[in-house]
Image (cartoon, rainbow, N blue to C red; front, side, top):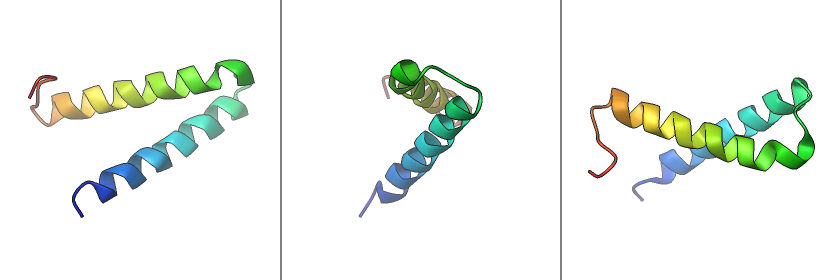
Length: 56
């Protein structure tokens, strides 16, 4: 099934980001937004490094 590996990588990154935020005392009520922001930035960077654009 295509894409299964991508989901598991995203989930692992999400866990790492949440753990790091907790470790450095990031406010719990803001962790969800911060986690989503970091994951979006990581995806954009990965796409840029892979030579892809946002639209295709």
